[in-house]
Length: 533
Image (tube, rainbow, N blue to C red; front, top):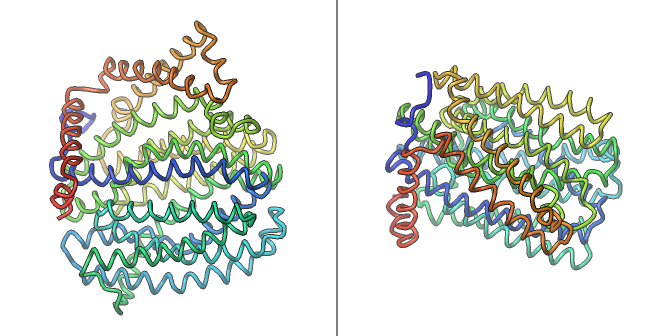
């Protein structure tokens, strides 16, 4: 197979209904999370100094780093539960669950002990003072959250994204209420940490109760299986390399900035990364159902559907990602002003740099997720090692001269390099297709269309200079964004059609999706039962 043909890029009947339905619920959950974070971030910034916000960001990074000491076990739950669920092997599923509970109970104690042992040198290294109480609460929240996340992964493994997202949405409401209560009471970052502990406990109880209620054959009784746990560690260890690489890639720049420029600078870096991550989250949700779905296909030895799924998802993710990244580069300054008001203008340039790298990272997401789903995570692991090495070297070297801008540039260059490597090895060693044919047929045309669409909007600004001037008045910024989008989107879509990136196959797919979506909305309960039965 040398190139991607239209006949290969098509929906897959009943299998795609499950994928689309799971993706729909993931979109619903992520959209809600996006809205909450969008509104909560400026609220938190108004109740904390930029220094305190920087401390909160760094503490979150530290604790996430400690959670990586599970050697990737958490990453293996979805894959193993999904594979066992295909054959309704609840004995194995129960062994996975209990073994995980036993491990994470001990692991939580381990995290707290290790965290406390390194507390003083860690806080001193990054110039954090008077945060011992907050630090301990964040450690405790992390230990409890890991157990709750493991139980939530059972719903994801049996492809009940409706249930997992419902729980996550409910917990986000609890988190918002707690955040408002504690910040209004003047507790600052201590209140945020205390709220995190409360939310972790509530999430654990809610998830465990829901799991017992929805899946009657699930048992929390003694079912420890050392051999199975060892096998899961073997799979998860490869995934853990990717998680460590992700930590270094997406968080290390904040640590570098903290050492070089101080805690206040971390806030500006975090704001730029957070807004760019929102852009990244939209196409990533299109990939979120791939691991359990392709794990199911792998258990059925249906390689042909795996190949077709790869081409289909890659094509649509490329169109969405390039469009979003280009528009974010175009209007970063306006979006920052609308979101946070004055005082964060320097974050706009960081957003433009990171949007390119984050977008490139998403383009390799299909290969990463399908590789993990079919039990071949080594491709992503190799790519992550390259990413980690390059990002560390470039970010430190460039940041010394250009500060936060240099760190962002180093991150983007590393992300682009790692993405290209991942596509090469995955397509050559698993897909058996030509790298350049896939690049040509899936990625080049959206990139060209995005650049031309951006230039079209800039040209319109030259003709009507009053449009960009709207960005100077905060309440008029939505009008400017609407005008820019009204120009950008039609140009982008027309070019996609003109370049034959969008074909009659895609139109048929779109019609199928709309018909299925309308039927689902008219009879949501009936369709859910039919799909998840």
